[in-house]
Amino acid sequence: MRRRILILVAAGLAALSFAGIAPATAQVSGDFAPFVSIAAAPDGAQVTAGENFDGTELTNSRQLAEGPVGPAPAFVADDGFGCAYGTAAASGLTEWIAVARRGMTAAEGTDRCPGFQTKLSIATAAGADGLIIINHSPGHEAGTAAGVIPGIMIDKGQGDRLVASLDPTKPDAVKIRLGLLDIITFLPPNTIQPTTLSGVTARRNGGTLTVSGQAAFGGQAPVELGLDDPGDPPIHADMARFGLDATSISIGQPVPGGDIDFVIKVTRMESQPPPELIRYLWQFRVAEKEYWVQAKTSDFSTATATADDPAGTATHVPGNFRLRGDCATVGVVASCKHLAWLSGSFDTAADEVHIRLPLNLAVAPVIAPGAVIEPEDGMTASVQAVISNASTSDTVAQENPYTITSREVAVGIVPSGSAPAYSTTATVNEDGSFSADLDVSGKSSGSYDVVTKACFGSNCDRKAVQVTL
Image 1 (cartoon, rainbow, N blue to C red):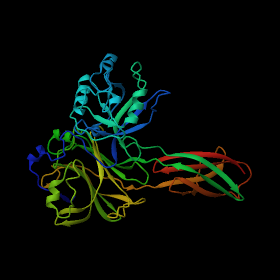
Image 2 (cartoon, rainbow, N blue to C red):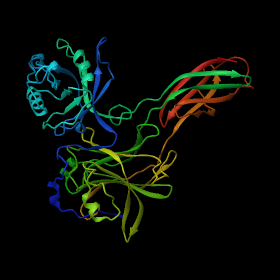
Image 3 (cartoon, rainbow, N blue to C red):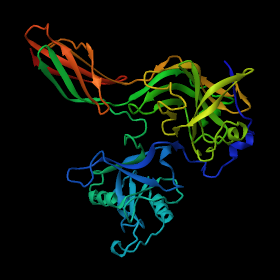
């Protein structure tokens, strides 16, 4: 295996901090946002199960990238503004989420507990697992408050509906969850929607049967491509707690047509990887071209030492995710140039690293639906010390290729009650509508099942409609 170029970083960098980095803050870069998600609600409530309210985290509170809170009951502060939570304490519940208003107008009353820090500190002392602050106006704003529980501000209108739905005598009736949601799917990160078929019809026109309908394609769950035995982090067994004991690598596509998700599973990731010192590097090949995807907390050392690295390194902290390519080997050392900034996350709750790579990038047009991601040198979780080697890295070999999938609908016609058989690929439009023509001119009279299968990778749905010829 070729050695990989790494920049010399003194051991003392483990204690370094850079502007904008909070050492205990997990990192998310890309299409994720904090949300209040309604996990349960009774009939007649002003909020509904499955509804999501977007919000803004209090900057120095425990970040939701470190893991969600709930589902749990919610209690409005007894005074409405966050001064006391006697009702919550009297309930005897050990898991609950505090709700407080940000009162700024005469109509709302005087806010006797002003300031985000005051509200967060009181909720924490009362035993809450999280705090929702309802803004005094539409929208949600940035706020600063330090705490060991997450704090999130939501829109006034949404907050009013939430408060109206809460019944302190039935605290379990409404349960809410604080977490990060993918702002494309409005689901928790890495959640896969199922594929569904609807409105399937079959209409005969002479010897042709036209099958049409609508497919809502879900994504593809990560496909496991390589495994490594646990218990072999580099340097010392305790390095596992920094996320250096990698056990598997996978690739999925959470949203059809969206980014492909490189997933690195580790045994433990107790906090964000230390700045500069830990790198996740996955090397692969597409159409005979070599590429790397990389995840780090920060990468200032590379920016100052490698001429091709662009401006923007400081703005990608925390969470430095990138695509490299145009690779070359000098002697025995391989290096690839920066091509694009990517999104990703260090998920300390799931002990996973996610790197999301968009398709059809101008700098990497061969990475597109139908392309095959071939193994190169696998994935290494490394402590950077000049050049990584077996003593500073834990490597997971990519054992299998991965084909970037696309949306497909197949149809067929079989005698009623027979096993499905698909003979024709339908034309699928951008909105998921599809149609296909089946030749039935040679079929004898009788009852038939027109079978339809919509798939995105292994995420499929099937429907059958009966016709009489």
